[in-house]
Length: 132
Image (tube, rainbow, N blue to C red; front, side):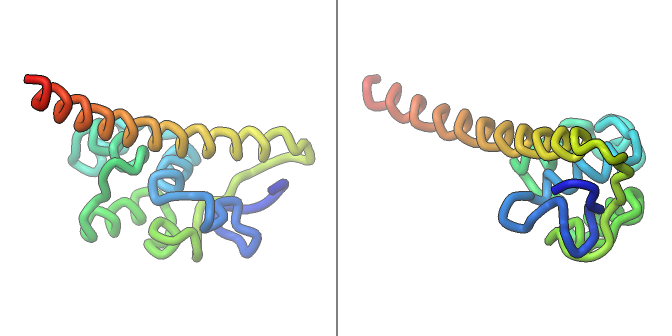
């Protein structure tokens, strides 16, 4: 995973690992944009961007097209990790690539955590209904 491009043949975002949200966050961060800045450019709420990046929801097709244009990546890369993605400029030091891998893993875990919290809420609500 060292000294690679996000969109190259040795994809940093391996299809088994990265989600749409991971790729969206990486492309946004690559441009130095905050979620709120991207949201303003896209005409949505910052919470919408956060939900997309956490894989709690997905944008409609027209939004994906606009996102790809704003972020300078291909639609195909944004959806699948294949095609033209943003380039990461790394030096010979592999710490940069390792840090990026850890950040992607953290985003993935945060998304899982959010989904589990939602599921827990549903179970708790059902339990309260049963116990009355």
